[in-house]
Image (tube, rainbow over all chains, first blue to last red; front, side, top):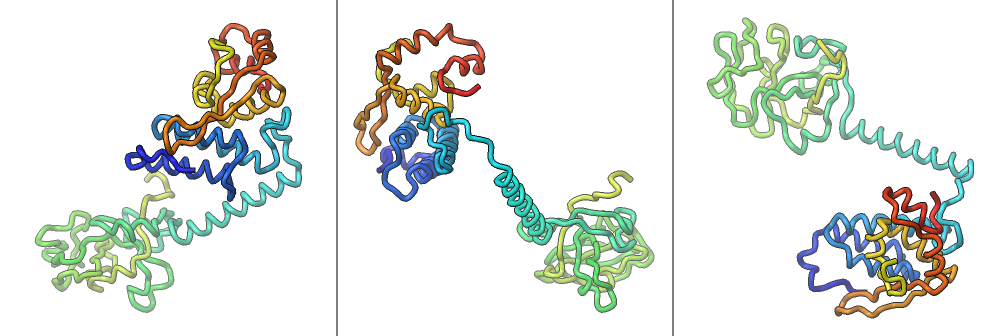
Amino acid sequence: MSIALASKAAEPWSRRMSRVLLIRALRGRGTRSTDWGEALIAEFEETVGRWEAVRWSASGLRVAWRQRRGIAPSSAGAAVAAPPSLRRRLRRYLVIGLVVVVAGVLINWQVATVKDVPSMAMSPTLRPDDKVVVDKLGFRIFGVHYGDVVTIASAAFGPGGGSDDLFRRVAGLPNDTIECRDGRVLRNGQPVAESAQSPRTNCTSVTVPAGSVYVLGDNSDNAIDSRQLGPIPESDITGSVLFRLWPPLR
Amino acid sequence: MEDPQGWQYGYPLSKVTELAPGTLYPILNRLEDSGLLVTRWEPADRPGRPARHMYQLTADGVAFARTHLVKPAKSTRARRAQIPGIAT
């Protein structure tokens, strides 16, 4: 059955989506639903605005779902479903549990995870054994910015760096000119705010190449960072710190 | 009940009763099954529109409604309690 053609062009997608879902749910593969199903579909066209359409459709989907499970709306008094059997409930809990575990594993792997801080390099901001939540996905979409604390694959620090990712702060992005003067790191001639002055700060001037970042540890006196290593490839960034989980206060 | 013998559409009924269609249609179905309601299809008034289902109370339905309807209730819960065939 066709839909109202006149208003189709100006119709918001949520309305169109609701109609398609409703028709699909009620008719299945067939061309006609039950009488009440067809009535529901027809009356959908009477709804005004997107929210009413969405609510109408959602409620229609609910009966369609119940009908599919054998609780026909016309059978007398059966609008209230019998409580599911113990076996059915157990199976439902099992499925929910499995979905939660699988989703958790996937999220932990690809989206965000909790990491231990391995070293003093980011002290006093982050100390060894602090727990932080690290975003593993968003920084790939939105990029990294000045001042972000990122995790870097230890391989970027050469052999002997251990296997834990290391935490450093982004001080320079592609095309920035970085130099060290009087114990301070300068980006395009301006001191980098997050980097403390340190007698150890001494580096070769460099323009950060495309696809690289210049990273520093907050603990300027001790950290091994781009001052010694130079810019590191962006591809070695494994995550971006969102917040410190533990300790919550310091 | 303002027009007890009139033909009604589902959408306005849903508005008046404040029932979601998922609740309303099963009720209409049961009323039809128990002979309190007759239905018919009305061809679309505009091209491209689907035919609409219409509902009318039978004489039994009107009588049933008269005996069961009291003054319009204030709360939704109380209103639901007045509607035959709905579990409260």
